[in-house]
Amino acid sequence: MDGLTGSPHVSVNKLGRYLTATPALRKRLIHAQKHPPEPRYLHYPEAAQAITDFLCRGQDEAVLRQHQHRLATTVFTEEFEAHRALLCIEAIERYRALHSRLGLHGVVASEVGHEPPALEMAGVSIRVAPQVVLQTLDRQGNNKVGVMKLYFSKHHPLDERSGQYIATLLLAFAEQHLAPLGPIDPRLVRVVDVFAGREYLPPKARARRLSDVQLACEEIAARWPVQ
Image 1 (cartoon, one colour):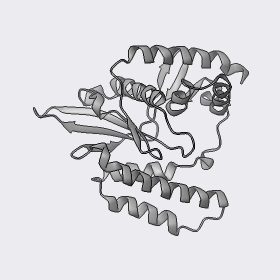
Image 2 (cartoon, one colour):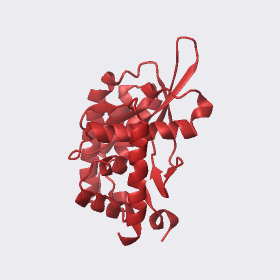
Image 3 (cartoon, one colour):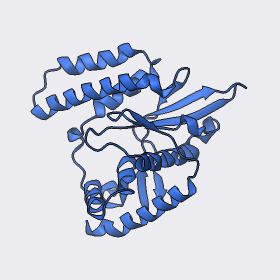
């Protein structure tokens, strides 16, 4: 058992759901985090990469079409892989329909990378893993910095509370790890629910939400050994 599997950890998306979940769902979420599926059974990595490429390559829709074409014309040997390709094609299309409403014109995006650092809270590693860093200049020519996190789920859309919890943690990640790039602008911190067609920004009242996260992490750490 490696350190990641053996020590308490949770993805920021699952933590957002955990904070608004019933007790039974909380138990299932902890179990799923401790015993995750093999990476090849994840549903949306190709969609996340396609959207990341699109954002980092000048927001040219041809990039999205290229990814969709590749997925549509690849011959897969397993049924799951073929089904995943269809889901990713749909996710890319949903994002394309949403993108113009995000107000990212003139914003420069760069890829975060595959192993961004985690946030540590109450003995739990929170894997925030945003896809891109967002940067723009204000009217005085000063650099402003933010990040974007994509959320993919056809059947479990984020509600307002979950989206704001995730956005709050995304802002904490940016403040902890990206401050050398320039001041963090909360308006550039985005959680994008691709299938629901919604985005969430950090709320102004963040202290209470961080306190809720602290308590949730304490609960996860306490329950971890018995899951």
